[in-house]
Image (cartoon, rainbow, N blue to C red):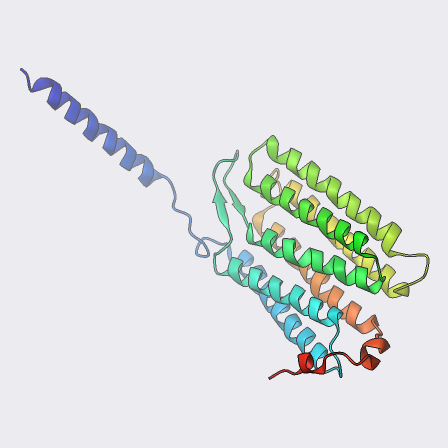
Length: 269
């Protein structure tokens, strides 16, 4: 019959469509924040509240001075940007359910957007405290940005390529550590003990990130999601809010009080 090939073709198409629909129905639909474990949601909320409160306090500490300082402004932005990132992740934004790896992973790429802004600001705070020159600041910030970008690309890639990106990010991190130890802790003594303490606080906290990366969702997946988010959140709060309070409590800038700057820029409505 001339219609036999048409019927066979139609049946094949219907069968293929049914198989596709069945396969799609079998795949679990993962949506965030609904599919977060409760502990993950709690940690993200704690991170947001900690950063939000810290941003308000840092802002007030700045405007309550006779003349605001760059250090106070940068410290406020560090906390404010982190608060936005944590709220976004808590609301289910900036997170990807990665199914291309050996096992499904939850990747919080919003934290990398946070780090690519806040970690350079932390380094600039340290550089200003030590009165570092412009080439030192540019080198610190440049290596730091490359470090974060390598981590992000690795998080979105599959093995074995992602581990090469992790190694690349680690190399840039080592360069940052060397500069912090050799150049920011200057022979002239600028920054004093506060600079040394803040530098070591930053180094110790930042060491946690590549370790969690390699054992967490981005790497081997050996660490549970709740443990990963909890460790990162606590580390972030120490590295940003703890850093900010330590910095502003130890920074004495009498020149900022005495130099007649543009006072109109210090007026807040």
